[in-house]
Amino acid sequence: MSSKGKKKDLGFSTRAVHVGNESDALTGSISPPIHLTSTYEQDAVGETRGFDYSRVDNPTRQRLEENLSSLEGGKFGITFATGMAATTALFQLFDQGDHILISRNTYGGTYRMSMEVMRRQGIEFDWVDTRDIDSVASAIKKNTKLIHVETPTNPLLELCDLKAMASLCKKHKILFSVDNTFMSSYGQRPLELGADIVMHSTTKSLAGHSDILGGVLITNDELLAEKLHFMQKATGAVPSPFDCWIVLRSTKTLALRYQKASDTANELAWWLAKQKKLKHVVYPGLKNHPQYDLAVRQQMTPDGTPIFGNMISFDIGSESARDRFIAKLELFKLAESLGGVESLICSPFSMTHAALPEKDKLAMGITPSLIRLSIGIEDTEDLKKDLQKALQQ
Ligand SMILES: Cc1ncc(COP(=O)(O)O)c(C=O)c1O
Image 1 (cartoon, rainbow, N blue to C red):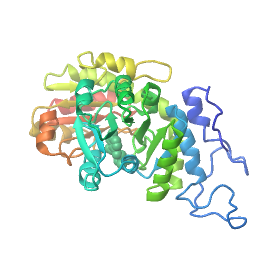
Image 2 (image 1 turned 90 degrees about the vertical axis):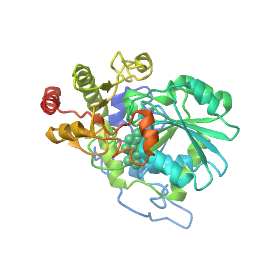
Image 3 (image 1 turned 90 degrees about the horizontal axis):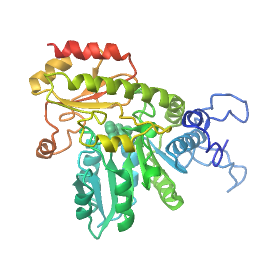
């Protein structure tokens, strides 16, 4: 079954379809089997056929880990039950007294886990503006062990220059991890730019149909992979074989889905930017985005074409305008999450970022009237009409 070392030279979508998806050795089934088993018969004490217990490893999970690491350009993939379980396992590599620096407007759940769980266990955190490498450099302390970056950030779509951050981390011998959930492996590959570890909530664009939860950590470093596999086994937040299969099936269409959603988002962002009722439209593909040039340089499809992602944020001016707008939409559904085939709308202030202190949110620009759109793969014109109708109210 193993495809390690093979298929490296194939294109992104060919790997998406074939790596980890080899036909079943026993029956030839083209679609890989789902190994729904908790345990495995051993031939004698200590003699297994490669698997002994599904928390430790499972053939369907192994296929998914091969698939996801290949798409990200990494050697090792370690999957988890959710994105939060993946980030938690990553932070659990560190000890009491260690210090972690994180992008200031990351997903609110990362903030909650850091401040309300890991901090109680003695790990220190600081939240920094990772657009500004110099200010990150000045926040580094003697005990800083990890810089964890989201780019673009959630929901303000602030970018971090990954190459520059990687060289800062190398200089200070600090590990560098990137939450690549927003861009997906199709739109950005931080390992190629010097990151040590990439994290995804596979719940989002990788699974892409709003039907499962999952997470993954990917690295090229064998020692790190060993430690993360140990964490996966020791703490046990592993994905079910069924959920692994769903993600494995879904990444086959990742390039098609992500490209379509991103093309539509680009068109809608330009259109939204012309609407007088909206105060501030944020999208990395808009020329007035302060980091447009970095987006062009850093966010690219596997063939090197710039891509700006499926997320748009804008300020609609007031809470009452927000509520009227959301109530009038028919296709955009009000829901947490992102990256699915269906378009979603949310109010980050009270939904995805509810865990952040109010004054921090307001200082960053996460106001009650800020709206975040996740663009799906519906017809662009239908989505535009839906937004237009709601805006006219
Ligand atoms: C950027 C980002 N990272 C991590 C997570 C956490 O992932 P999960 O919900 O799969 O635990 C989310 C969830 O919304 C997210 O948006």
